[in-house]
Image 1 (tube, rainbow, N blue to C red):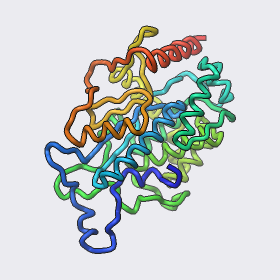
Image 2: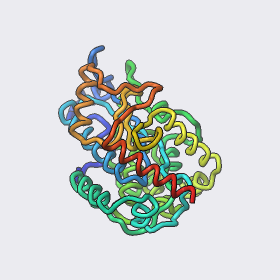
Image 3: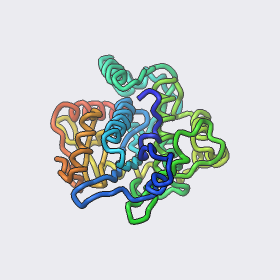
Image 4: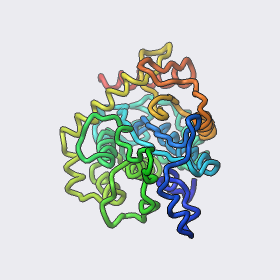
Length: 333
């Protein structure tokens, strides 16, 4: 992934821009048949503070890169849905190492797992610096998707519509802008994913505090080009607080994990493909590519998204349940 930028992975490769014919094809709808899928909408349910989610995001982007190297006509739109793991946490209140080891009650072996899995995808975790409530980061991620807070699902806010004569999304002018951007960027999944990548990279690898408004304003201005005043207005807005909390709560009603150790809880990261197919918990890039291949061929994956819970027995489910139970105990102190 070194040298690859988020927006390069979400749009078709432009290898034929040297002639006018290729430029005309650029605006054509991806050719597909009823049995073949070339347009993928992915809902990424996550918390910015979660190391597994950061690894999962990198694995997802690597999977898209691998898949597009085989199928350059594929179009991807990835949107984020918040799930706040510690909604009562205070801003900038904890040392990062202390937060995960004591507040979350995680053993040192978990740090070793994160470090190992991170190295596999080019991540160098750092456990220094401060941390706290992730709500503000989710508010700004949503602001990169829509200007006014609503309870719409994130996938309802996708930009590309696979209909006749629709141009490929996003515009090629959005590819790999240098930071800081000189002008405000168009809202949409592309901008939201660029901001997610920037916020989580700064937090997990460069000791930035994702609960600190000053740090979030700096990062968001550089990526989006939005003014400091409008960013600060979002951070100070009770309406945005309520919206993110509602979106986070609604996740529990849609996708949950059941284990022998606790009641229904949310497993993050979770991905929902094309508003139907659930891929919950930590997944490796090759496995995600395999799901894309099944969808392209019109073969249904095993986990269909319904109103019922996604059930994972043992393993990751028990680990998540145990940590959630510990977190709930800490929140009540």
